[in-house]
Amino acid sequence: MTDNSRRRPSAAAGVLGAATVATGLVAGVFYIFACDVMPALARSDDRVFIEVMVNINDVIQNPVFFLSFLGAPVLTAVSARQLRGCPHRRWVWVALAACVLALLVTAVVNVPLNDRLADAGDPARIADPAAVRERFEDAWVTWNVVRALLSTCALACLARALFLHREAYPSAYLASAAGSRASR
Image (cartoon, rainbow, N blue to C red; front, side, top):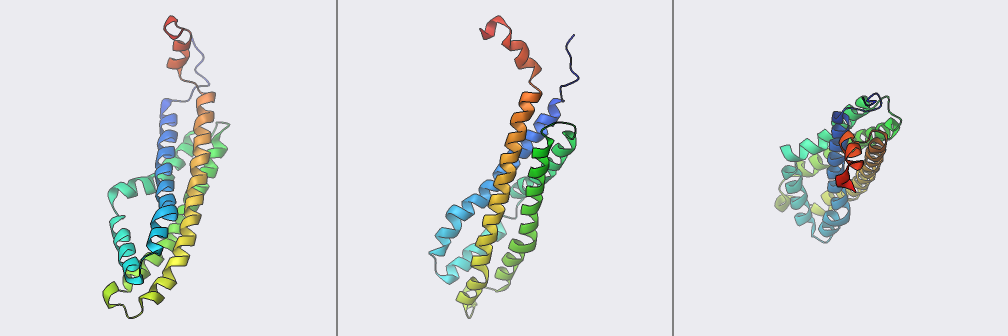
């Protein structure tokens, strides 16, 4: 008979893994905007910049993106609850705080900026597109970098928790296979 008192159900590892993947996807979106999309758009004229950003903001609002964007903090919260008695739970709680902060930055800063940009109207008809861009670009880029850093921090914390979880609760299957002839 084996001692299963230290083992967590595989569901906890699965949720932690899913939270890590979802957070990685979100961090990647913010990272790619910081490193590629916004620097590329910075080379565009004002009307093109506004048109492309409005189009991006329309297209990104889709079920696939929302699944990871909202799934990351939800899965991280579920994981934090499941791992509340584990020694590595602090990593998950820090990740949850970073996920929630990134979500708040998005809701309080980036989305209102996106809305104001869209409310400016058709880029071809805006009287002063340079002024519209000026009110948007620097603030949006700065706060996107903050979101990227927060999401990357959350990803690192979740990856650390996943690694520690694996060490604390090794797979019974892998442990039994390690002693078998097939593994030698």
